[in-house]
View (tube, rainbow, N blue to C red):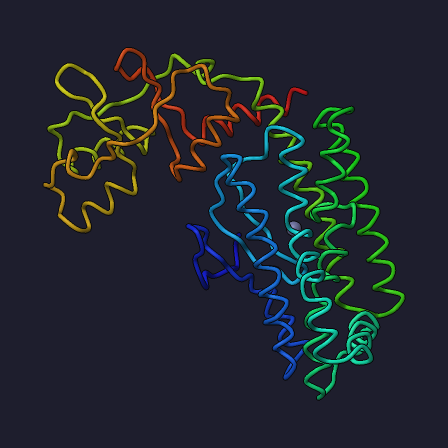
Length: 355
Ligand SMILES: [Zn+2]
C-alpha cells in the first residue's frame, strides 16, 4: 500500500505502518501509548488472519496498519466461502480470546470497580487518566472494541467478509459481494452523517475509508470475474523475442530498445527455455557487473512457466505471488509466448468495455 513503511517482519510477513496511523499519535498526544497498545493488538489480530490464510495456501506478503485497523495483503482471495469465513473470523476471535483469558486475572489485579470503570471510560470516549490500573484496563478493553468494530457487517471490516462468505453459499460470490458492498456503503453514509452531526473527525475518516474500501472490493471482484473468462492461450499466438544463453546484458538492453518487450525468456542452443530475465534483472546486473556480463549469470532459473490452460486471474495471482510482471508460456520445453501484466490489462479493458 502506498504511503506505508516497514517496521518489522514476522513469519515472512512484512509489518508496515500507514502514514495515516500517525494521525492517531497527533490526536492522542502524550497518551500515545494507547496508540502503541492498539497497534500491538491490531497486529495480533492481523497475524491471526494471515496464519489461517497461510494454512489454506494463501500467501501473505504484508500487513499494513491503518488507523481503523490493519490490512493483510493476500496474493489471492480464498477459493471457498468457508475459507473466507474462517480467515475473517480468526482476527476478531483473537481479540475476544484476549478479553476472555485476561478477564478474571485483570479484574482480580485492579479490582472490579476500576475494571469496569475502564470499560465505561474507554467506550464513553473519556480515556485520559493518570491511574495506572485504569490505563491498563482501558488498554485491555481495546480488544473488545476492536472485535466489535471489526464484526460490523461492512467492507473492509471482517464482518463484511463474514457476511459475504455466508451469502456466497446461496447467492454466488459476485452477488454476495454486491450485497456486502451495499452494506458497506450504508455504514459509510451512517458514519459520515454521525461524524458531521457530532463534529467527530475520526468518524468522518472512518466513513471515507469504509466507502472507498467497499468500492475497491467490488472492483477487485469484477476484475476477477472478467479475467476468469479468458485463458493464457487465448492471448496466443503472439510475437515475442527470446534471448540466447550466450547473450550479454548489452545485447538484452538493445533488444529492450528495439522490441516492446521488457522481460525475456533465455533459451539454449536447442531453443529450450533455460531461464527468464526481467528488465530489473538486466538493469541490476549492468549496475553491478557492467554491460558485458553474460545474461545467463543474472537470469532467473526458477521462474514458473504457464501451460496456456491457466485462466487470466490465475496468471495474475502467479505474477503477484512471484513479484514478476511477465511469465513465459512453455510447451514441450519450448517457449511459445509471454504473458505480461500489460496483456492482462488490455484484455480486461477490452472485455470490460464490451459488457
Ligand atoms: Zn480483521
